[in-house]
Every structure is written in structure tokens, then in C-alpha cells.
Image 1 (cartoon, one colour):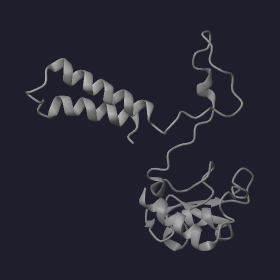
Image 2 (tube, one colour):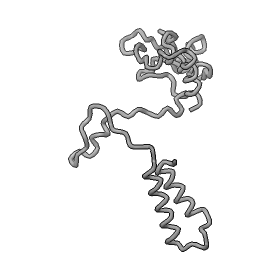
Image 3 (cartoon, one colour):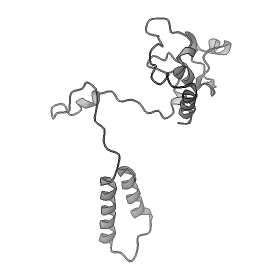
Image 4 (cartoon, helix red, strand yellow):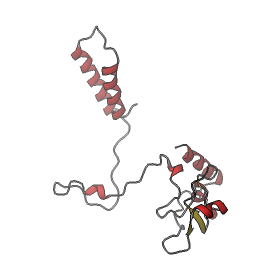
Length: 167
């Protein structure tokens, strides 16, 4: 089944780009397209999700109040957005999934990408020369916690890292 937005786009595109059937009257073609669209929409297994979190529901006085709820970002291109976590305290995807490998001190700002680890090279003389020192033992720079998914078997974590590199 197709989601409604792609169905609408495809239907509109077919009616504009495709050659209409000369045997059918315009309104017949239009009605068939409308019926197809309604069937796609009603049969769509993707349902809207409920909002979660502590927020005030929308009202006419504050119509955008629910926008204050947290919305996680897309993972598209995550491989290119190192360092990770809210404070940039984890230099690579590998260090994110293997917390025991998270360095206490590394260098941010060196723009050579480490394809094996999924992030920018953060240690070594070149990174030290070109980057800025980041010490995770300082207040506000901690990289502890954020352990969701790190209890998976190592092979599964490796597979997740490889998948994230493809996005």
C-alpha cells in the first residue's frame, strides 16, 4: 500500500504527465482518480501517532502550543554530523554504540573523516594540531549515560553502525 502523500503525488503526476485515455471522458477519469485516492487513504496502514510528553494541548488562544513538544531529528546523514550527543562529547558512531571506547579527551575540528568508526578523526597528532581539545571530565562535557542500545550484542551494534553510515 502507498501512503496518502505519495498516492496524491502519483495520481496528480499520472494525470498531468501520462497520456489520458482517449476513450474516457475527463470527468470519468477524474472520478476514477478520486476513488483510487480515497481507497489508498482509507487503506493506509500508517496512522498518525499520538503526541507524547509534557505539553499543553493546542487551543484557539494558543494554536501552536503543541509545537513546544520535543521532536527528534531525522537520522538522515547522521554519519556526517559528528561529534554526537547534545554536547558533542562522543566523537564517533562507534564510541556512541561502544561506551567503553569513549575517550576522556579528544580533539574536535579536524575535518578528516574516519569511515571505519563513523566520525571525524579525533585523536592523534594531526587531530591535536588542527582541532580543539575537548575534555569530557569537565563539568557540562560529560559523555556518561546515553546507553540506550549499548546492551545489544557487539555484532548487532556493529550492524547498526554500518546501517547508520548508509543513511
